Image (tube, rainbow, N blue to C red; front, side):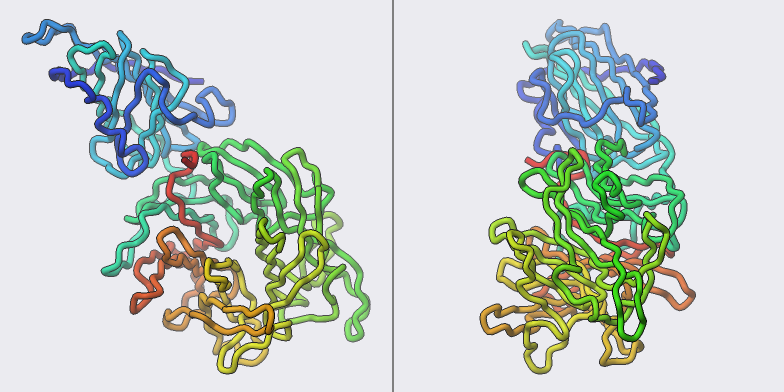
Length: 537
């Protein structure tokens, strides 16, 4: 329910100037200002305050003046400003300006240029709606507005003050940055946000280039271990986010409302884990698992888990699948291949034979790229036939140029425009070196799939460090690389993640970075040109 409180504030009167209501329009997504007119604006909110899944508090400011402009004799429009805040998402608020006559308005945050304000639909020419994003929680805020009558007259300006609700569990308001003389990409960085070890919440966070948190969402969890972690969190074209946790695929809006939820069991699967991608046909492709008994000469019959790929619809129908047991040899066991994974269906432990952690689909060529951590391979799969086209890595199908080294226990392959393959090479699990000699890196490989050779085209110049699980490396808009060192263990046993932006032409390549507080880790980070809730243009 909305609790309404009305506060009266005085307005300054200024002479009307045509077009004044549009002064802030250019800053809708890059700054703190927005304008709205009687056409209803350019963006549709994805939720309302009436949703039972989000608690809302509303404050109104009835803002008017009976004084006339002495030079023109025109009485300005009377304005009532109503603010709605959300306990479940304190970084977002809604503003409604109710006008005594048809008009248009511009709105700006008084002090924070990083707050993004966008006109939204849902009103009419006397009810102007705005969504305000990027607000600091538990903080007093002031929004300044300027209103002009559609038919001309004195402009009315005023402001409304309100306090945002308390921050959600696990919130961090800003991060100390390490920077260089190279400007970072003007993008928002969105990461999953997980406690170490798994705690009572999991979530996602989005920060701006200045290191200030502009969107954060966390949800309580009673799960333990990997199922508790939010993974594959991505911003969708409509402004919602998708992800996986607890063997469940979900879509959430910016306020945290769950719009879609598909459990693995709904698809006839034991699990959903590590990665999910959205396809152009509206379907989704994710990683699951199959559990089978395998006869090993040295171990006897052992319950073993291999990875599968499934394509499914939002209606919960599996329309395509691929199974590693049908295309790879379970007798090939590498380091960590005898780690145990519990089948959530029967509670039995199984050997973690393949441990897939990423899947990509090139819809032009019909080739799937899949990363198998416990095989130390990246494989290419023909979507049409299911055949494995090649296996990249140690003991695979490519010969490596002399002097170069393979990746081990890798994550996050990404094809580049020049045909090279970028990935995050954890480096552990390498049978040819001591564990103490392991060095993690981002690396790009050039592949010749005719001559079946591979070579290192580029590699990280970061001083030696180790990340033994998870990680990410992406090419982002503007050409830089965004690398997520997911979990670096410190001398006191603490865990920190580090996110680095790299310019391959700069020496050193790291031009921007931040590190999480102790015992917070990040699986992946993506770079986005808009906040959660804002639809792609």
